[in-house]
Image (cartoon, rainbow over all chains, first blue to last red; front, side, top):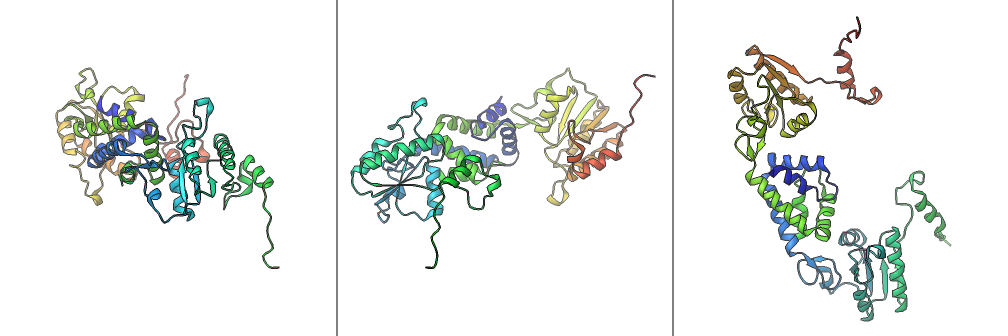
Amino acid sequence: MIIERLIERLRIMPGIGPKSAQRIAYYLLDRNRHGAIQLADALVEAMQQIKYCDRCRTYSEVERCAICCDQGRDVTRLCIVETPADQIALEQVTGFRGYYFVLLGRLSPLDGVGPEAIGLDRLQQRLQEGEVEEVIIATNPTAEGEATAHYISEMVHQHALKVTRIAHGIPMGGELEFIDPTTLNHAFNRRVTVERFNR
Amino acid sequence: MIIERLIERLRIMPGIGPKSAQRIAYYLLDRNRHGAIQLADALVEAMQQIKYCDRCRTYSEVERCAICCDQGRDVTRLCIVETPADQIALEQVTGFRGYYFVLLGRLSPLDGVGPEAIGLDRLQQRLQEGEVEEVIIATNPTAEGEATAHYISEMVHQHALKVTRIAHGIPMGGELEFIDPTTLNHAFNRRVTVERFNR
């Protein structure tokens, strides 16, 4: 039946279980059929037209994304992230004015995701162009993200370039009592020296 | 831009905020473009083809829904619910074999939702047909649901028919300590006599 089919297909979205899917289906039927049709149009348009930037691999509807096209950014700094969402998050809050490289994944040999699948051959080429001076690795602090970071840092070091990794530790505003043991241990062992403010 | 438009339109769904919408958009682009197109098809199909049953007002792709078409049910009992989702929930768990009437809303004079907007003129006609003997009111125990229940019970009483209301109280498995005060007070004051099992 049509409603059941809609509910079933709504469930392909992450975080949408059977109850939410039913609620969404009824809500759209009841209150916003016009909006639902517009959503369907946007889905088709995006799925058919969004490709990948040929330089940084982020999602783009044109061959090269807006950031890669921006000549005013600092070409000496390249920030490596796992996903376009990570890139947007950093772009929104950090004021970073270099360029990005998006892996669209992380190394995962057991799942057959090797260096080429996450574009490291193209990263290699990019480093050979000779403009990048610092590679900032901002993969996630998961086991696979860490392994990917390690692999990339080895690769960058072969080019004798500076490699940095975004800091990990207690989140700002976090309370020590409630932090998971791994983070707490990492934060304690990688403690940083506090410089004297006035000498 | 296309992605922004998709993210914005995903937000018409209840329970989907900006973060979830972004996550869904990237997930579909990254992992399931085919599924997203199928979802778009299902949305258009449902929005264009789902109408209302001409007897009970629930969603139906044909003029009269399957339950209303089922001649084997108990015509003397009519259960009144606010939404098709409520009807499905009752149908799945209660074993009720009468018919339903779906209000598709609740009385809300301040929002301009009067008796006709929730189909009470058609309910009136249905009661005049003379087959219904018991009206079971299963509107939600909210202020508006209660007001709607009250209005309907007055209406049914004019036809000298039996009116029942689904029971409200402590949910099965609930712990008194954590129940909200209104429910607890209601449950205490509407306590029911326990009959002796053996005489």
